[in-house]
Amino acid sequence: MEIIKLLIKEHEQIEQELDELEEVIDEMIKEGVINFPNLIHSLKRIKELWDKHEAKEEQVFPIFRKERIVISVRTILFEHGELRKLFDKIMKAITLSDHLKITLKKEGKAIINKLREHKRKEEEMLLTISKEELTSSEIVELERLAKELY
Image 1 (tube, helix red, strand yellow):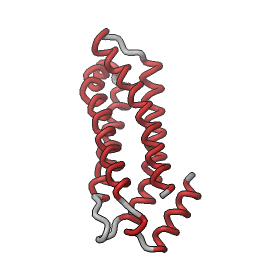
Image 2 (spheres, rainbow, N blue to C red):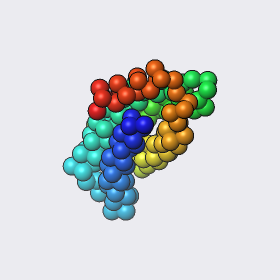
Image 3 (tube, rainbow, N blue to C red):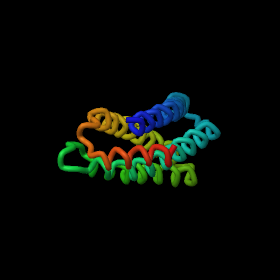
């Protein structure tokens, strides 16, 4: 299904930004210096990509929330909220620079790991859904969303 391919492609874009953020955090841990331009750029880009991606998923995933399709949509949507909280902690820490290094070590690494794990779960879930499990009206709705969202 096209919508699944498009969502996974967005995961790949997010992963590229996570790699960049991870480099900034690793450099900070190793060197003790924060590259603020790269940090701000990475966080803004991840947040921008994630917010758009999450909004699309929250329109698509309810279509998969059927008894005959065994997926954990509730868990995935709950994790979206947890990830938003981590983003908020990091963004708040940037304004309180004395706490930034501590927050980045803890929350920065946590958000990278949680986002990666979350993407893995979503991809595993999405790749197990087949057209045979969907009704014709669900397929039409997914195709409509693919055109509307992309």
